[in-house]
Length: 460
Image 1 (cartoon, rainbow, N blue to C red):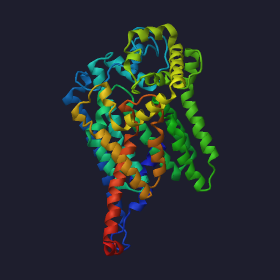
Image 2 (image 1 turned 45 degrees about the vertical axis):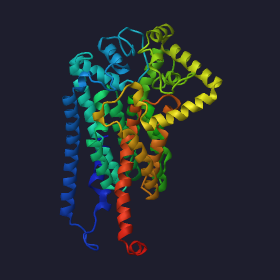
Image 3 (image 1 turned 30 degrees about the vertical axis):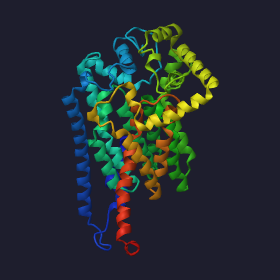
Image 4 (image 1 turned 90 degrees about the horizontal axis):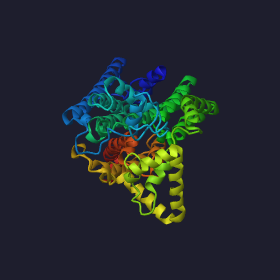
């Protein structure tokens, strides 16, 4: 993995950036010394951009005191991850996702983030301000590091300046630092991992090796143990990476098997744990049926009513305890499927509404207003800009636009069926920002070229 990361890093200033070695005048190429100097400057600027992004997030945390969770905002310091982390810290194992009361083992979430939170709790106190300060600092680092894959993907799609613009916007626009500082959750890490996987997939199209395919499968396995909701994008990224093999006349079957086998190898201990502890096979996590029921019942708003959640409603928690986790999920799933059979038209209407909720930002009013300093009005604006950007990117034939389009179209599909809290969009917001930046930078360049060309001037 270190080898692959080093090789991918060369896309910022090495062989992969050869097209950026522009001529000075009519074929006069830049000298090797100036090229090395430019690449050194670029890497230095990249480092300082990460530092600046992290510093901004830390400043937000200190000035606003977000680690105290005492502000009027959509925030969460007590949730499934923190309850399970508490249970781990107190020696009760991976259990009790909804209360301090022991309620048995769970597969409600995957293991990586609860274990990370538990490690922090063990050293800095269970659900303490010190622990939340440390966790938010690490989450801020995840968010800041996301500028790296944005820069890398920008180069690989043929527009370094678009990558720079996207990275700067990500580093300094308040909305993109919000989730690292308001939710103890894997949101920022998930966004970073998906951006890295897209960067990796693009890099594999030209630089594949057996070791690189192994690393890709391992990274995907780790990602699934962080956030299984990203699983729908595994075949997307793999297919685009394998296309490079096929295009060069190389075998694609062996790399596909390598990635699948390595991914399965990484997640298999958790699958075995679920079989032993939960009593049946559970693929990664078991709560999809419950989430489906949370947003689908007669006269539902389609946004997931907290009153039906065992973390909020004592009656539901008692039912969860009585039936056990798997029994509780099966009962909720049966109720939701009965609703779909009885009211199919209402279900279709709810799904259509959830498409709008996912993109227009109206869902943020359901949990309570988001603090104005995060600039919540930008949520709908970025959705609109994404639509325009996709049209421009397709018109300009952006390299690998198909994969980025597939990511933003496929990822939300499960939330159209269940319920779409606004934080779920954050996982694909790096890709949204990159598409918007490409459309802006390359669209303006295309327009200027058209305007300045003899044919363009004549038509004007």
